[in-house]
Image 1: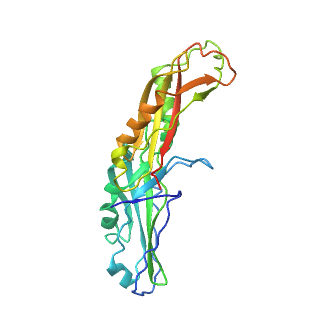
Image 2 (image 1 turned 60 degrees about the horizontal axis):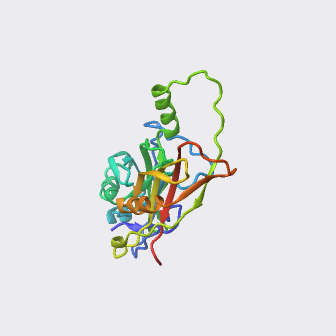
Length: 264
């Protein structure tokens, strides 16, 4: 079963083996030329995170031979954080670690880049999985996902095609919104008896002129749809207002990320 992660970034847990082997250097071939990852902004949080995985097995034959290496996997992510269209794009050395990684991918969950900011064009991403030996002790670790496209640029391009800008001058800025009344969503009851897990949700909320939510659309709910359902039920009772005290006068749309934590 997948191991829930309590802290970000992804913990790199070392497996301790009694067998001692001598590590040898193994050249790593970069996969950057295959499909370059975009640069992530400094200090970004809550996006492009590997939140749950099953650690791949380090083959005993590779330990005995002192073999180290790396596997690069690319994938799409659905609205529940699950991987699809997975592909091993690089394995060094070939045929040693790739199948070990492939066998665990169904138990990974990922928060796609910009998902918690309500961008629904989840980018195809890449993760590097490293197999290392230090004084004969094997360690398997994974880096955080690197998006291959920028969902902000994709969204802007779509809007430009669907609604070409008209030269009517600059639109007046609308006053910022804040939450006047909130309540905490409840952790889904039927999940409490299962293996403890964190839940991540991104919701798009349409606010009526009176400040009350008119509609809540769940755009992302990982690793289970129940987290989105619990969030939607509670968000409908929230209430917004402008930061300046001005009336809303018109419908507004907000993006609200939420995180569910299992009881200790």
